[in-house]
Image (cartoon, rainbow, N blue to C red; front, side, top):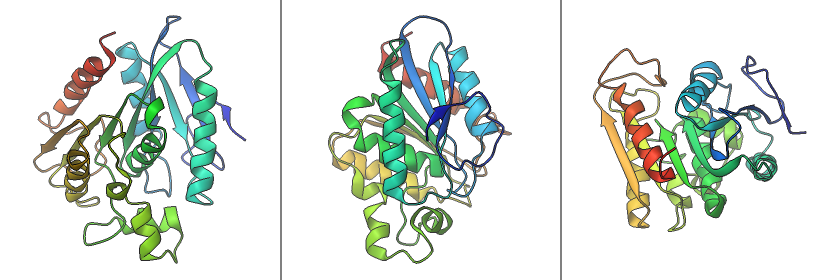
Length: 240
């Protein structure tokens, strides 16, 4: 069952729940947040509630999605999250929707955003897990998402580079070249797929930097991603 929740402290979810935060009572765009965690756990604090506070400061309504990890099946997970999106679309205070995802949460955000392309205005993808095949695959996410005995064919089917179409929403992507968990080539592969399909993409690569920094960056140069994302989001939404 899906339902709203005010409790964002849990690091795992048995079924998808969401935590909703309105910045005021005006009709505004809504940012839907997908925390990462390799489809094994959810980094709710740094990639969920921290991001929700950022959306609030920038005058966006927001939702943190606590999706089931590991999912029973990819299609069941998509079906459940699509139902949540349909519920949120009935709220008169939400004018448009943007997704922001981190790591495996970025994989989920982009997968779902491509499936719901006509309903989503844009995607912010932070150090995304993209491919489940080849030398740059994030095997841990693939196993948790697809099951331990997944085939190469199934892995290819759920790799983002194979899902991109000309209808995919515009994307903002950032990654660090020093990411030793999810290789930066994931963002390069995704960006090339977007370019090949004439989808607007803004890509930012930062030197060094570990995986999963979110807004808790030790490096001030990497911290620039926040202001860059704000500028991109405000431009896409026409300003707040």
